[in-house]
Length: 220
View 1: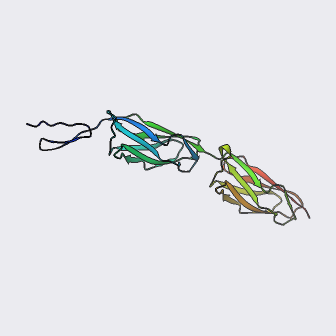
View 2 (view 1 turned 180 degrees about the vertical axis):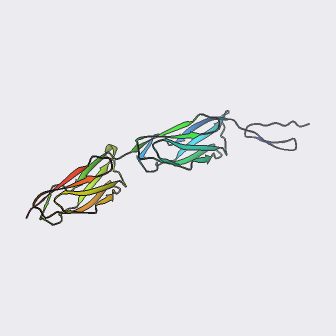
View 3 (view 1 turned 45 degrees about the vertical axis):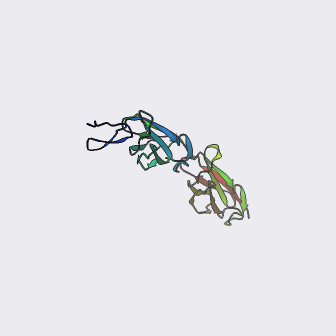
């Protein structure tokens, strides 16, 4: 008489049917994606890849791995992924905009949580790239546009950051009054001076960054 037997990853015939072994999860390890850095609000350049192995070191397929953001306020897509034939599951991670240090948790049944870390590059400096201290006639446009640059750590350009302009002294006009930085971290505006002769100023604001002042002089 043939006895019923079950072995890891083996499918055997016996007792009138197939017997599929049950693998016991032994480890969840990181294959790819730790300690990446990118601008906050942007997807990491490489996906997060983890591998699930059984207690004998063999891949476990078709097992759901859960991914969730722990710190930083970003998002993962998808949040649950079945492992493939290599025991691997991957997800995409968009970092949040709240803090530089961010963490993601990967979970498999019966195992400790695997933590993945990333660094979000956040805006840190607002600088005048072009257009300060120009001279024009009263009520006339300055010869060159005002160009403002938003930078992050190591002078990294920050794309898609909102910047606002406001005339403080002189009563002139600025157009546009706000905009989003381009791939160079820059936003451009044209400044038409007011009618008073003398110094005129423009305030530039972006989120919680220290505002800056652009100056010009109206001369007859």
